[in-house]
Image 1 (spheres, each protein chain N blue to C red):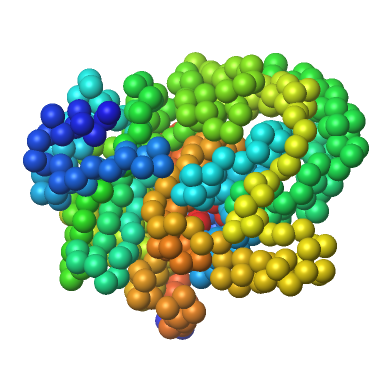
Image 2: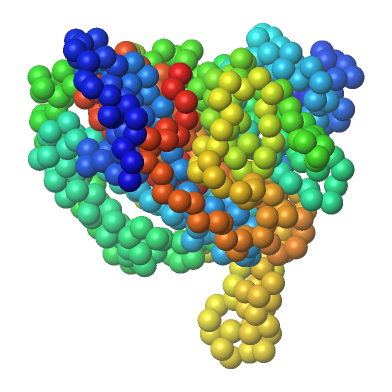
Length: 404
Length: 166
């Protein structure tokens, strides 16, 4: 292979400190969790320009949803944000139910809230643990993994899987809580409390950690809003926008919780906001468990919800009912609907279009990470190369969601 | 009602309105859309600070073929509005709103990538999720979902930079 011409030129004597160096960081870099590439122009250690390249995990989510029935979208939805799959499930279910003008039974709504909050805790624990570990605090990563494990076990007990849950259905949820759920949840929350206070002591007043986080990745409120950034990043800049409060869905308006905000909009505030949100999630979980009503978890409409297995195996009507829903899909009336939920990283929206057949005509997801990643180059230009790691860590980019 | 206020304020720029499933939608004409969006952002009655989302729906048989949907949100006034623009098929293009909301940068790139709608005035309209050598726009309804792509020879990014330096 012929070498490029500029490599064959003799080296000119010049001051290397004046040179702008081009460097490509990624797509698979050990210090960034997620496949992403930064095309950097560096002036010494400072970032002169940064072009963020996403799409390495593109799996045609929206196109695939158009190929199957509405129920078959749920497994795809799981795999968007794999740190909090249950929130995605709930968001998609709510959007389809809007098309049907359907409200699910109270117990189903409570269960969705409970599982969403468990997911939010696992999401934030992942973000904080991995973010801290990338800044050098590996201890914290192991502590947060220890706190996360009981919640994944709970998700497994309820849904049958740790990450690929596929638990929500149109018109309700797949199954009720197991009998030992309440004591296991309170044990997991107690464990979480202890570990969070440990992590707090390890990080919040840690000189090294504060130097890496405080004043880094700062972005003004106006810029964040213009870039469409929501979630902990926006709240860290002092804007208390939380979909759970702004457009309450399910039964969130019945619970007493606070929307924590920061003031500087830097990485340290983002970390603190996520930390505090876990305490608020814990509060919601305790209230929801205390007031959990009895009753069915799904609607009983046979056009929407599968019949129980005893009926499928023992009666021809049940079998036909099951066959129709599985083979033809749930007939959603034609129309368009949008539903937003508060995901781990911000407003997670689903816009669904039905043409009246059993299949979605168009499914659009609004992934919160995608817009936050769009603002990343603005956060980084002029900063040091080491700040990429902590800023990227606090954005908590989830490849599945960002790349669709 | 938001759509009635909009009709009062903008008159015949609004072609039709719809409010269903808790979602208010207005259909507008594509010419002068940028001024309309800027007014929506700056008018104290509407204050849509957020362009939350932007995407297209392909109605293959219909003329004009595409619906472009802008999802706007005002957090200070707490309302949400969906604005639709219809885009005709051969040579689908509209004006970019990147001067109004910066989030339009990546969202317009994504819509271009997936649906092939061009945004006039976008400074850097290139593919975002797919690679530059990808043929076609996959979310269009006439793109078969199992279609294969031609194999692209491997290129050295140092010898052939993916994009010219700024």
